[in-house]
Amino acid sequence: MSSKKRINVWGRLDVKLTFYYTTIFLILSIMLCSFFFYRVNRNLLKQIDRILMDGTLEFINTVENDEQDLLSICRAYAKGMSVRKHYPIYFRVLTRDNKVYFESENTHGLAASPFKPKLHPLLEFLKLLGRTHPYRYYTDKFTMRNGTNYTIQMAADIELIKLTLRNLLENILIVIPVLLILSVWWGLFALKKYREIVGNIVRVTNRITSQNLQERLTVPAVSDELQHLMVTINSMIDRLETALQEVKQFTADVSHELRNPLFALKGELEVALSRERSDGEYGEAILESLERTNLLIKMVNDLFLISRFDMKKIDINLIHLNLSEIVRDLYNFFLPMAQEKNLQFSIERCDDMLFRGDKTRMHQLFSNLLDNAIKFTPEQGTVTLSLISLNGSIQFKVRDTGIGIPEDDMPNIFNRFYQSDKSRSGVSRGAGLGLHICKRIVEAHGGDIKVQSNEGNGVTVMVTLPVNE
Image 1 (cartoon, helix red, strand yellow):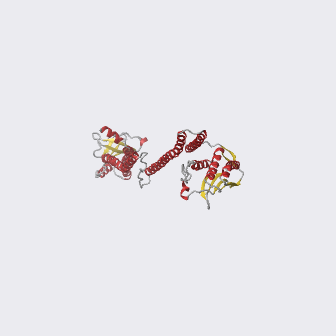
Image 2 (cartoon, one colour; image 1 turned 60 degrees about the vertical axis):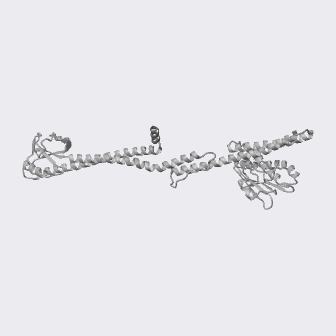
Image 3 (spheres, helix red, strand yellow; image 1 turned 120 degrees about the horizontal axis):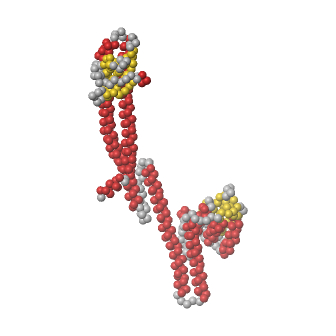
């Protein structure tokens, strides 16, 4: 159990991020402290070097300008150096053959270094024999007035510098772990809020099912990546809920629309088989059944076409068409139906022009609109067609004096299975798929379709299509 918990803790995103950034912080801190330690060491040594060089220059100037002998000058200079408390300076004078001419106190163990003209002046690290701390010393050459050459070595004990650096290193070794602990604590504390938000996302998304799509994530007020993520997830859930509602509604509508014709067909056949009938009665029952079967076939074909549109697998065979020819052909086809209802069926205007589109779909579009206009226009009514060429577009209108559409139903008339006149029944009622298919065909050709009520009775359906090159 503890092993599993340990794995879960180390697998958490906030722990991983904290470990990652803490490691980077630790590396940068070590680099920065190393650089700082190196610079402090260099600066302190430079200060000692300046002291030694200034002291050497002062001694040489004294020798060159003072009338006293060299031994007296050395004694006076050593006496002045002996009063220094911090960074005490020791010096000695060597003859040409590197023999000690004079040395200050405590310099007897300072190793004699042969004079190297090429490295003149010389700064080196030395150690006193028998002592553990190093010395920094400076070597230079000077000449007396009588022409005698001497070498002066001036040294300073840098144990105080080493002590300072050790204290600095100890402080760094104390500060870095403290900063490391604070970094880990602050990282976990800062990421605690985000971990809670992620945990809430997990809990809410686990509760979301096909039966529970009302759940939404609480969007934080702070504008960051998590807010954008949660807004995107909520938007995705909205789309899923809408799509699922459409599927449920579609399934219910299909079941309802198919059930009525099937029950009617079943009833016709049961009535026909309930007793012996004449050939004419059987023929009439078969004809009625065939008509209802054709309605079912048309509905299935329409549903298949809509599904092809939904999956974007509809084949649009674009060719150059003369829409006026299609309109005139459909006018001649629907004219007998209009005359049978005593309708005034006419073409108000029909401009000849080419349009690049799918002939079958355009024929289906105009046919559905004309069929609806004639079907829902009562006897002695009027149905008028027009095909007008406008600037950069084609406008096809079907105006009727039928039963019209209530204003409340206007926003829904292009929905699947939506029927404004719910009082109708039978074959003339239709399935409510025609206008939806018309809309999909028009959109596939980059056009627009809308319906508006006339001032008197009826409606006008207007299709606008772009003129392609």
